Image (cartoon, rainbow, N blue to C red; front, side, top):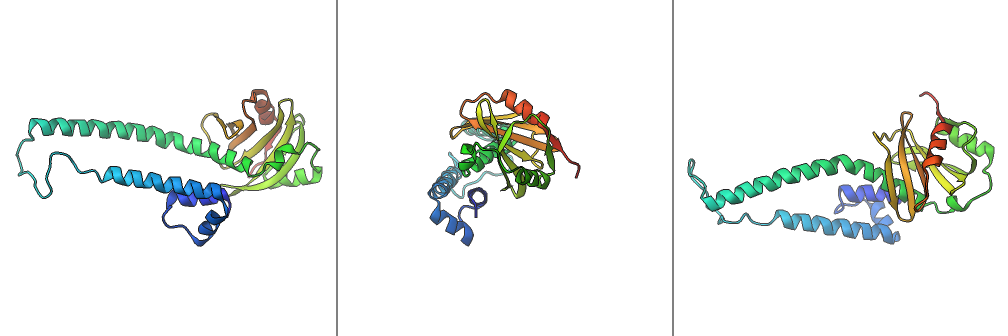
Length: 230
C-alpha cells in the first residue's frame, strides 16, 4: 500500500483500517502521524456534537402551542443563524476541497520520488515513447529535455510522470487525463510550487521548486502535449 492509498483509507474510516493499512502505518511514521491527527480531529468533532442544548433539562419538553420564552427565542435564533453560516462555509469548503486535495496529492506523489528531480541526463527515448503511448499522449518539439519518464499510479489511474529540464530548473509534469479542473489551481507547499491547468479531457500538473516562476514553462508544456483520442 502506498501513502496516498493509506491516507484515502484513513480519511474515510480512520477507526477501522484494513490489515494492509495497519501494516503500512507501522512502517511509515508520516502516515502514522496523519492517522493520529485524523483521529484527534474526530474526537474534537464528537465532543462538539455532544454539548447539551442550554436551557433545557433532560426529559422536559413543551406542550404544543406553547410559546418559547424570550431568552429561548434568542438562543434559537442564534442557533439558526449559526447553522446558516455553517452551511454557507461548508458549501465553500465542499467546492474547494477537491481542488486542494488534488494539489496536495500531486505534491505528495512528487515527494515520494525525490530522485526524479535530480536526474539531468536525457532519458532513453524508447522508454519515454512507451510512457507517452501508455498515457495516450504525444509530445511536440519544444518541451525541452525529458530526463525522467515513468508511468505512475495516481488516484486509481496510471498517469505519465515526466521531468523536463528548463531554465528554472527541473520541472515535473504529470498528465492527468481523468482529473478535471475548471480553472487553474496554484499551490505552494512542502518546498514545491506548481499549478494544475485544465487541458484536453483532463488536466496537467506542472511542479517546480519553491517560488519558481512556472508561467512560461506551463505554457510551453500545454503547447507541447498532444492528446490522442480514446
